[in-house]
Image (cartoon, rainbow, N blue to C red):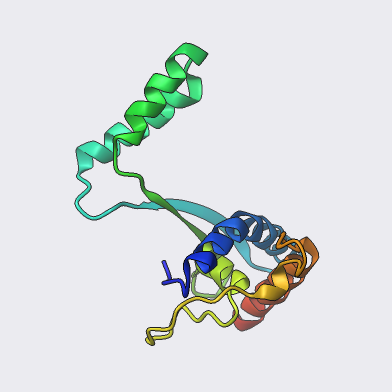
Length: 164
């Protein structure tokens, strides 16, 4: 996860990441429809340091219980779940094409590139993430879905162009 320039930048990124992920996945689907690449998604979890195997198993067992819990049991299961370390989901797009090496794309990194002004996940500098203010309505601060979609489309198109 990148370092943020300010607490406001972190807050704005939190607002943008899920919409960015939605736009990224939609644009990837469109690119896959028009290419020879086949894509599958993989979900992994990044656990806080010190999380043991038993805690991870308990987390998943409680998540499963939560999905089928009665209204009376839901709050109890949710409270138990909150006592455990919380993982961060990691979403990866795995691309395959006959005669090509498999490619993997970290979707969160792509979303950070969309939300940020000039985010480079490969940069070794200590730069901090600044939010791309063109993605926000200047008067209300609300997310500008049109700008978000245009930037997501452009970056996803670049990713697929770089596959060749």
